[in-house]
Every structure is written in C-alpha cells, then in structure tokens.
Image 1 (cartoon, rainbow, N blue to C red):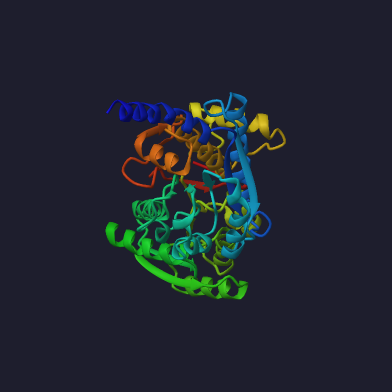
Image 2 (image 1 turned 90 degrees about the horizontal axis):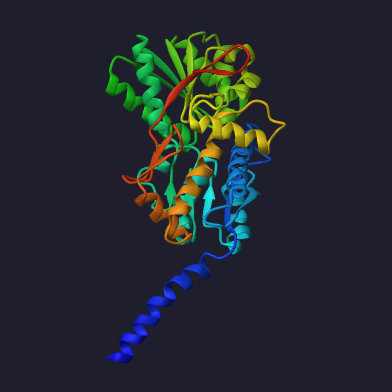
Length: 374
C-alpha cells in the first residue's frame, strides 16, 4: 500500500515536469495561403497584421516567456498546394494554422477528412461560407462573422432603404452557392425582397453575361458573392451592364482593390465588414493595432480590414495560449472554449457557445478615393 502511494505521488509530481518539457522552446504557428496567385492582397495583408501582432507580443516577452514563430507558406490557391505545404510544415509541429484562405481549399480539407488526422487547430479560416461552418469541425475555429451574418446585415439594410428586389451575381464555388442560399433565406425572413439570381464561372465572358442577365431584370440593388477577384470583376461588369443602383459585396474585397477593378464604378458600393474600422483611433484596440503596425511596417501608410483581421487573429491566439493548461493543439482548443469572452479593447470574441467567436457586422461604403466610410 505504501509503495503504491509513493508511486502515485511520484507520478503526480512528475506531471508539471512533463508539461514543461512539452511546452519548452518557441511556439510554432503557420499561415498557409495563396501569396503568389491570388490577385487581391488579402493573404499578404493578413500576414502583415499577424506579423505586427507577434512582433508586439514577442517584444513584451512572448507568451509565458516563450516566443512565437510564424511560418509562412504559399499554397498557390489550390487544395493540392495546401496539402503539399502541410506536409512541409507539420514536422515543425505548429499548434495552430492561422487564417487559411479559399473556400474550395477549406471545403476540400473538410470533405477529405484530412483535418481529422492533423495534430493542429485552425484559427480564423477565410471565408466564412456556411458550408464551412455547418456542421463545421471541432478543430476549426472562426473569429469573423460568417457570410450568413454578413448577408443578413446587407439584406436587412436594403429592406430598411425600401429596396424590393436584389440581383445576386454569385460564383460557382462553395462561397457563392452558399451565399445565394443565405440571401434567399434572409430575404424570406425580412419579407418584401425578390431575389434575382445569376450564376457565373470565372471567365470574363461568363461574368459579363451573368451581369447582363441581372441588368435586364432591372433590380433595385445587387449583391456579388464570390472570391475577391470574382467580386471585383463582377461589380465592374454590373456597372458596365448599366446597373447604377446600390451594389453590395462581402468583406473579402478591400476597397482599394475594388477601385482597381471597377474604377469610379466602385464609388458607393457597400462592403460588409466583420472587424472594426482599421483607420479608427477611438478604442484601445485601434490604438494598439496602429502602434504595432507603425512599428513593424513603417512603410505602410494605409491600413485595411485584412491588416486588422490578421492582428486580431494573432491576439486571440496569444490570449488562448496564455490561458491554456498546455500550449498544444488540444490545449489551445480547450482554452478557446473554456476562457469565455476575450475583450481585445473594443472587439469581443467568445467561443464558449460554439466555434464561431464573433457576430459583429457593419457596412462600409466606398468613397471616390477608394476608401471606406463607415
């Protein structure tokens, strides 16, 4: 009996040592994204926000004394590329993959069951398409409000303006098809809005034809749902087809990128936003974000929502890691769910009720100089 108690005491006393051994060294996280193929600057700007936050965190001593290493890899905007980069990075044991981008890639990751076998978690996948969230995956955590929430906000806003019809130009991808379904559901909920749909591939001729089909029905507004490049080209095509009414799109298309696609046709377009205004100065989050960006990226003079998204993602990861019993994938997942609300100084994230942390949505309107007015 005495021998058994001594063994049990030895095992208990060894547990902190084991945890320390597991938690020794730098904390590795990875960002796999389309850095060389996607024309829009989204992955690069996400990375710049991540880097700014981790430089800030490491400069203050890291996470419980450990520095964070961010590994950046290019997947060429394909699922096969994503899998190849996973094979390269997994030997380094990243505890989290941050902000992977692409609805087809992410759906492939879920449909193939690959995520089931990976010893890592994903924090803040982009986009927020419903097919990536319902039913979702226990290792996949979304910070940003989803496409359904963005589209509900857009449709409700349109109805408040007494708009009674909306043309939906959507890409033949999961982000587009689930976006159309969300628009129909939102229209049915608010009532009084007719949805006119047009599906399109990515070729310019296909987009132009779909835009003309919508223009022929003369809707009082239009919504474009798809990848950033598709959305920019879709809005330009709608303007070229004669659609002068209010056009909306989702948060993945930055206003400056839209202006490059559509020129002055970008003016007045409403873009759903899932994070606070990156140009704001009023909240503690705004001030911390701007200070970190200015220190890490002094050559960048204008900040975008994707900069803010990357910064917030890194901050949420750091808060979860600080509170985790062990900085492992399972420890991070448990910490995200157990910790309740993360208040980043004006933007709150809470995973206690599920794997979507925020429902915050606003609409910014593109100005004549390619900026967003909230």
